[in-house]
Length: 357
Ligand code: NAD
Image 1 (cartoon, protein in one colour):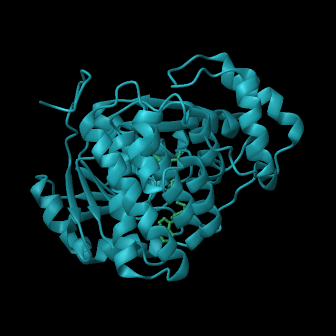
Image 2 (cartoon, rainbow, N blue to C red):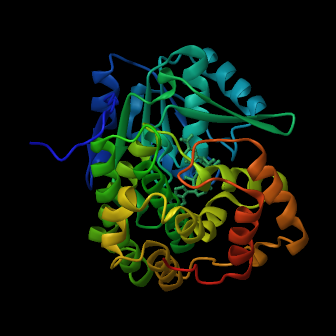
């Protein structure tokens, strides 16, 4: 007897993970394990001191340092970085940072096939996905390709002790959104559902502690562990209404990525609560049975933004966004209609608690 009723397809995701406090020490060993000799090191300008310290630590294995990684992976930055990669005769990439730096590393690796080692310092989850978003001439395009997924990821929670609390909260809730949508994905499978529930549990436990005690080592470790699992889900199964709606709002109204996710999550889960009741049940159980209400209360406890009006959006924009969101059909447990989305957006605009079912 088995309790797995449906058919499913599961493809294991490759990649090596080193997890734990102090694993930054393993960078040189991991570069050599890849069979490489000269790494091209990447960061944002903000994390330049950290990447320079790493270059010093690995000595001759550091072939060059590039500290111009930017949000949304502009193609002109990638082209400059590629020229420097070639000029210093590097044979692999080491990205240290969050989704922006990892995006640059992926953009280089996708073009030149160089092995890519990531030292992840936020909860965004990009380090374990095969997804690359790039911008050129003001337009963002997203592509998926197995060769985009980094070969090695180092998760050293010590590097996240100083991640600002607001960023920790919004990127942690963003990670939870990957896992929640993974539960009702059209290509969901039991392995990803296990990872999703465990990832949500770990983040739900760790984030309130981080808000109270930002440098708590155990909570930092738990949040990074949870974000890894949620990232694996994002990189393995399809996302639905929540991610598409955040993308539409970001593109049409230029709203910030992580905050938009944090505000919409209780409302998108309420929208799908009835149609995806069975798939979402293990996550609802973590919130005392009421997933949407529980997510709303958690966001409040964490001090996360809760109303779209606070992001500078005008109420007049909601109709246009609802129309755009309903225009291109995609898989979602509940039908995506203009009126349905307008109702969802209006509650999210006002910061109202989602209706529980
Ligand atoms: P980020 O990489 O943009 O980082 C924001 C700022 O925080 C940067 O200045 C960075 O240097 C700094 N920072 C990073 N780690 C820090 C730390 N530990 N302590 C102090 N400062 C730190 O932020 P993000 O949320 O990780 O990434 C957002 C981007 O990633 C978005 O563009 C998003 O679209 C993309 N993303 C992509 C995927 C994917 O699979 N392709 C997944 C999730 C997010």
